[in-house]
Length: 421
Length: 105
Image 1: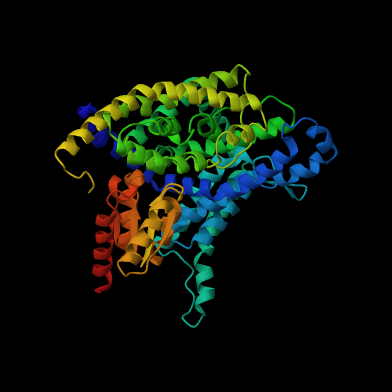
Image 2: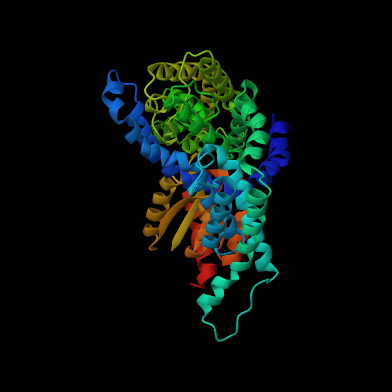
């Protein structure tokens, strides 16, 4: 066990760090976080339009199109927000003017993904389907900006020109270069970059919805948490855009009355797995409330509110602690993927609606599964079922650890040594 | 003293933030603690006197320290016990020492 812990810390952790620290991953995560308020706001309109309260759909029917405008102008423009925030973050990491980075990223994205047709921008790729294009074009835009800036390739104006004016000329050449390249490719050579990217990424996106993929992702995230690393912080750079695009596709399909294609979404893991926090820490907290050792009773007290109000489990993770604690290796690492497997099966046989509404991961259970599925009560039932499974898995390990601590506390008492630091 | 704790969403650290503010006030120092996700915090480091890295994002210590070196802001990595509040006094000692080094107080 000790050897496993050491190997995880020495070999696995630095790899996770390298991946997560890659500046493009940082920019992707930044873009993801920045788009969340807009996605959540769009979800409000989706909830109003589709919440499964009996009779609501008839009341809403004549206004549905108008109501969904709030959704279309936020979720439906997801790639626009990503393009802006990605360019901003990447430019900022290079110490370039972030606003210029954001704007040239957006310009490039629109040129490539929203060609003009009869004087209007084409909207096809502005929602979830254009996310990868936004990231790629944003990278190109900022790298060009950086190249020109670092090599000082600018139009040199005479000293007497005011600084603001010469500064705006500084960005002119890279933007011009970027525009020429993208315009020629898209407009003159007729290459459909986002369409091509979509085709290239479709197998990956489809694979992401597979049983193996969701179980593996859950396993990886849980393993990282066992190491005391925020698993989602590492994985979100890769998974985040896919999850966002997927939930938008599900919402669009639902609005059109079509079957929803995806399960790989944030609510999939968060609502039915992260009960009380990732690794289903809520099950641990519940058992801790019944523990006999003083230390664990104390941890339980401090963890209840964060876990059950906002699904935050760092208090119980660091307090128990479960990090690198051999007693908790099995429940912490394996509960989460087991629940992911159960949820995948339930959704793919049609027992539970797939998630199509994005609500914050801090939404308390059981509201979370209810809202994310537009009010499907079976989703709530599944959540409770999963919690019961998690409780069953955690029980023997919590009990064993409690017994150990009680023994230590008793021995500590007879030696009259205070355990407080 | 303006302190920023870098973590994932920013919420998990706000509990610690309050403990730090109270603890430092008890030692006669005014402090305000902000919490932020690593990605969004990387660009704001020059507005703070000390940066704390929550243990669950310690895999990002490299980029954070680089950004801190650029703005001359001291960066401290928190241990599990410091983050959970079990070793609060030790953490307060470290914070005061870091602030002293920076301002020559």
